[in-house]
Image (cartoon, rainbow, N blue to C red; front, side, top):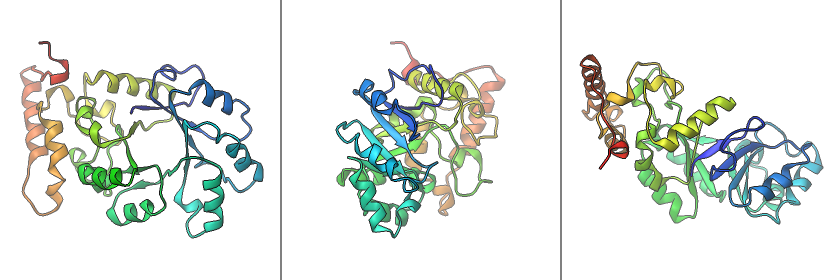
Length: 272
């Protein structure tokens, strides 16, 4: 379910990652070969940076790849919104498609599901309700994807721990509800390090070093072992008028352990 973004030559883990994301470059003559070589992986072809309809050959080239069933076309909703002819042309050129838009509320999700994508990206408040989101999407045969290493919130000034992200230690809690996990950041080093860290399931330091848009100093090694489970189940009730205080207590706990130089060993790292 981990997806690595192929953004530079000779990247590590391209052959190991179950999912690989690439940008669509119509002039690249190696796309078909890449898809064939990685037949046991799912290739996500992102077209967000080009206009598929500016040149008729763009869609024809993709259509020629329909003989392979291991790739998914990613397009922005704006490209086809309220234009059935364009949408039909896109559907005709691929076996599976999804949208690059990150969905943060139920109304938009319901609209996008009517377009029959194979997967959807969720963020913000929807990401705090993954169990219900997955239940709805999975019954329709639609997968759910997230970006794990960026703190996401509709309001940028929200406290960092109330933003959605997934620590490497907590990935196993979210896995049953996700079809894919991606990493923000275009750099080769970022993608490779994130893949390593989330595969290992543990981070040896400050969360701000791996979670983008996280500006607080919180040592991941000092957070309670149950932190991930609490966050997954909390539904972000702190903004719904219900008392919580989980994040505040977690930071206080972390600060206390740091002062006395103690760390929490997550269950995945404990030796029997």
